[in-house]
Length: 106
Length: 121
Image 1 (cartoon, rainbow over the protein chains, first blue to last red):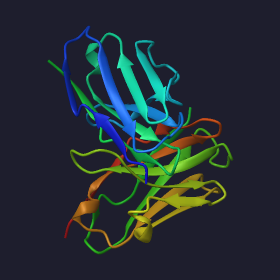
Image 2 (image 1 turned 120 degrees about the vertical axis):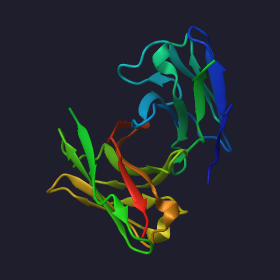
Image 3 (image 1 turned 180 degrees about the vertical axis):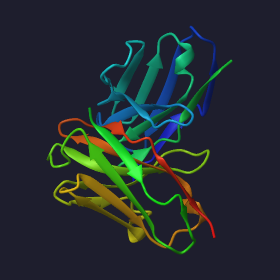
C-alpha cells in the first residue's frame, strides 16, 4: 500500500500570506495526485488533479506542483474562505489519502 | 447538474450490517468513464477510502476493509450501494459517495453531502 504523508499537520497563517502544503508518497505515484479542500460540516471539494491541474471553478491562487513522490499545494495569498483542511490523495496504486493539513487563522 | 445523495439508517447496532445507498441524479451512472466510490470520515479524523465500483460491476476495495465490504450497482435505479458487515464503534463515521473520473487523469469531482452513521446499541 502506498502511504501518503502530509506536512505540516497544522499551518497557522494570516489572510494575505502564502501557504505551502506538502504531500509525500512512499513510492512514486507519477502525477496521479489530487488535492481536496474540506470545510467543517461539508464534503471535500476537488481543487487540483493530475498534480497540477486546477479543477473547474477553482481560483488561480491555488496551484499544485510535483511528480513522483513529492508534491506541493500553494495558496498564493490566503483569503478568509481558504482556512480549511486540505487532503492529498494518490490514485497510482489503489487509492489512499494523506492525513490532512489544517490551515488555520493565526 | 450531477448530484449524489447518500441514504440509509443513521444508527446501526454492533455486529450488524451497515447498508447505504447513493442515488445519482442529473446523469446516467452507466458510463465507462467513471467509477463510483464510497469514502468515510470518523469524527474528527481524516478521509478513508472504502471501495469503488464501475457501472458494469467491477469492484475494488480497501484491503483493510475488504473482508467486510460489498459494493453493488443498480443501473436501472441509477444507484450504487454499500454494505459493511460486523460493524463496531470504529465504523462510526460520516459516509460519502463520490464520482471518480477514470481515464488519462483520475480524480473525484462530485461528492455527496455525506450521511452520519453511528454504531451503538
